[in-house]
Length: 108
Length: 410
Image (cartoon, rainbow over all chains, first blue to last red; front, side, top):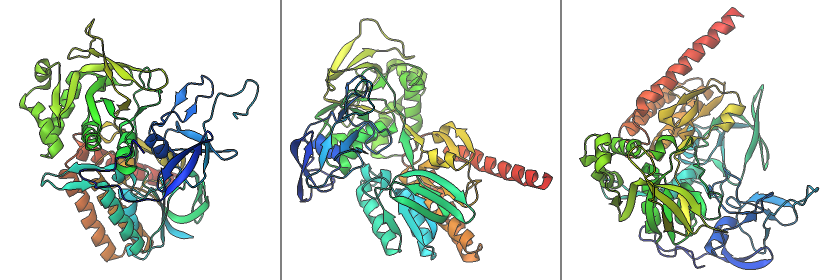
């Protein structure tokens, strides 16, 4: 909630929207309908969405419109999506991707 | 099968959809972003008459108009491949296959990154990413920011971030390098900003016009203050370059140095500006991957932002039944993209209906409108766009002639 631009001198006040609960790495967060995963996490001050497959270094959004694929996260059991293009929904389970295990193609 | 499929629900795609649907064509528009409007959505700047150009409102207006015209719009659809069949096009998407007789690519532009050490840290993003986060999602990426790259886009968005309640600490240049090229050389940056300032009295450019009180950029840069000049209270430091983005797990600041007019580092001038996010503004380039996979020929035109699919003034490419409109044809303002969209929509409708006179007449007016909009453009990304466009149209004619010759020879 803390990073929301509630009042804006030109665009006006944020309209009322339905709240949803999403889970990022099993931790619950409040978000709003209309948020993308990226905007919901950014609103909570969370910038690191995943860790690099080899180095393990943190990564967050870069382009925010689907071009760069830097914000890829796992939703549910195995689907990998771009956080910046994926709307949140009630109860959504989101996981950071992390370092590939040696000798395995799995990343979980 | 659809009469027309449009890829991209931005200003060009929506305008084209409306124009073609109003002529009775069966039109569908797809886009991978969850909201309709494309790059219009983030835009927010003041016109010379003081009115705000509100991209969110404009996008919604076009969206509603398209719905009223009977256009089918679907968001969250990503295109993965396109193939041409005897009867038209097959477009493979994340939501299945779509078939259409005619295809319009209105994919817009993409931001050119400037990689500098530390740029993969969480909290570093493109300037457009911050714009979308603030104006569209209404979320601040942070409270304090440094912008790397001084150009018309970064200055406009710096003000938009300020309106979101973000403190933009400074706009600096990227350090000189093989990727930043002229964007890292103060003299060249000032020259390009000064070329923009004479074009139009927008609020942004009028402010930036403070730079224009000097005459010759190479002379002016000598007297350009080290501390920078302020635009909307935001320091623009053309003699400061970012050498590294600092932070362990996320951005904490930017290490800068003072540079000479030609971009050389002044020893001992290192300084750290603290910030909790950083924007990289490397400029825009036409997003033309889809045009290349369907076999369009390309021309490199620096003024238009890079490689553009060769097309004529009717927005027709040299691949049959394939049209282009908007920033994929060259980086310009949303107003130009809208005008081009209308041309493409009418040109497609005209082809569909066997070049009926009344549509051809409307098309001529629409093409005239593009030229007029371009001439009056408040934000021109590059000087010399009209001339550059003529070279693309000329290339189209040459290619057409060559193809005809090849056909007659064989």
